[in-house]
Amino acid sequence: MSSRHHDSAQDNDQNESTDETLHQGKGRPTPKRREAEARNQRPLIPNDRKEAKARARSEREKARLGMAAGDDRFLPAKEKGPQKRLIRDYVDARWSLGEFMLPVMIIVIVLTFIREPMIVTIYTVGLWVFVAALLIDSFVIGRKARKIAADRFGKDEVEKGLGVYAAMRAIQMRGMRLPKPAVKRGEFDPNRRL
Image 1 (spheres, rainbow, N blue to C red):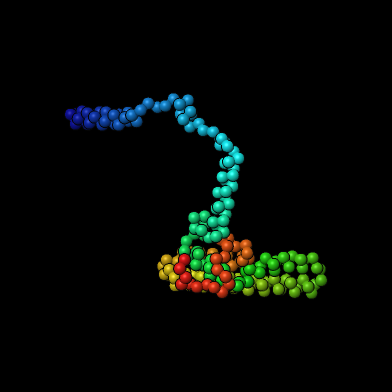
Image 2 (cartoon, rainbow, N blue to C red):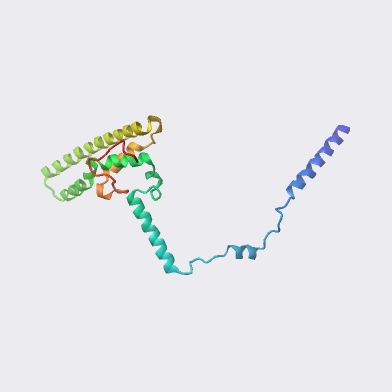
């Protein structure tokens, strides 16, 4: 019976200590609602809308030009880094079948209006041959890009997805690529300082 009395005394001591920790305040009174709302209130629109609009436009233009130039500060995360820059230079310095995909597709669309069976057969077979060659070219570009990155940065340091990144860039027409090509055709140097 005395052990039961002793346990209840310990429980009371623990309850008092937890009550003290629960009732410790933050050291200042809770602000009234109107005080909190007044503190958080700020104008929804700037005082000078024309100036804010012009500033936002100039910032967007600066970011667009920075991205086109390949400045890492303005590039999206998927385009940043020395490995991506190396791969962009490799892809931009070579010719690839992917660059001709859009013009070929436009020609095929125009040819679909011709109902002559022989012409339909020719452009259908030609399109499939082009697609097969494009897939092979993309595979070769991806493998070569990974090899170049491994030679430059070490096999263990190569980022995932560099081959796909190279293939996707190669499929775009050279003039439509962003960031814009920094090297001319045939001027790729894998040892160039990035």
